[in-house]
Length: 582
Image (cartoon, rainbow, N blue to C red; front, side, top):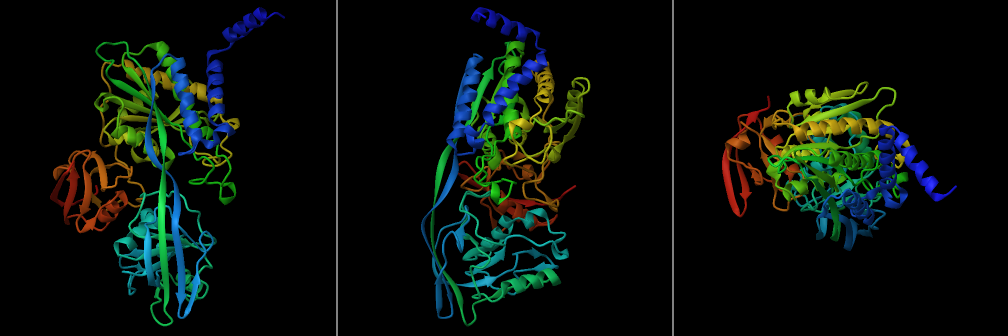
């Protein structure tokens, strides 16, 4: 058979292939590439994430679109430059072995001190009037030992989720001026790596193997058993003879990598509307080799986490929609964004909001595609959220769904933590497309073989319809602050105080940066604005969102608190009368 006959037959077969099948084939090609073993899970700080970004740029250029890569800094590695730990018990001294007995946590501060006494504070929990691990024990200038994981006992049953987090408990000890915190593990020490939360704390925080202390601090396991059985604290200070002390030297170095956001534009055809943008976004990164955030357990660390659904599916969806929307020539321009850093706390989308490549005031709506590859073939149901979008807009979008395609809609905090949150915090209404959590989430088994590509093609049809409806509309849905309300990360039960800041979750070296204040809130009343950096709340210094949450939790409705913030180089302050949550 001659080559011209083969080419003719190939063209004829493509012409006979149903449109959805061709879309499914293109989506499959994209997902299989992005989730391939060669890209090693597209981890942040990995060169393979840059390879994925370069692939997206090639796709855009093949479509005739102008593309650019925006880079932002990311702490990829934490390295010990200096270390030394000597445990002294009476006249006996024993060095602790790094990586076996003791190891720094990624956000640990540096240390250089001698013979600081140890204190055991159980779990480091304080529940006013109920349970207090810190009661009766001096914390200041002590090396405090706390246990990482809280037991499932009645004493802690009503403890808010934020208080259960290790970081919240460590922050309390930092505020109490502990010299260091040793986190007692159930087994071996944790590896030194970047951790969720602040880049660096003021005090050293270290992982301690369960058996590292030996008998130097008495029988800690017996004390833990007492707490579990009685629900009462069993703390103890070890400054009495024989003294138990720690001498610690630690210096950490944090190596930064540059992480990519990929940006492209489909120009609008309408001279009056082409300067307005509808964003189609998806995150490009995943977990790499599972060093952080893997749900597969210790045995999967070092294995490729392909991230086919999370989020090669969303990244591929944006590529497909761009191809179709370019042909459709919408009135408004379409801004195409692939973000890095989502798995580490929405870093890429937050960075883009702070350093937009196109005028932020011209961005009128954002559609976010995150985990859209697992539509149930027997009962196709899309979970669609609206954060900052009026509920009426969600209802209208739902009516655009193709026949046999079920959509469940919701607004507010229930719609999931993904990059649309960064846009909502910037007062841009958003829709979130999501086909649901599954057993392969954040595991090496999230592979392309499990993706429902026919389902993705159906979803692409719906996504195209919604995007065109927005891009071609005479007027667009306005931002709705009521549907933009979210529970801040780490907060379990609602706080008693409502303040009204729209938080920026990215690290800021000066304090807690906000993206604005909700209408009618206390924050608005005292004059806080987007870009302000809160540095003090009442008598508490604020270095990040976790400090701010702790400060709010320490107050009740009706309290007055002086709030200090930075606006550019100017320090400002005002007294706030705090309101209760409705």
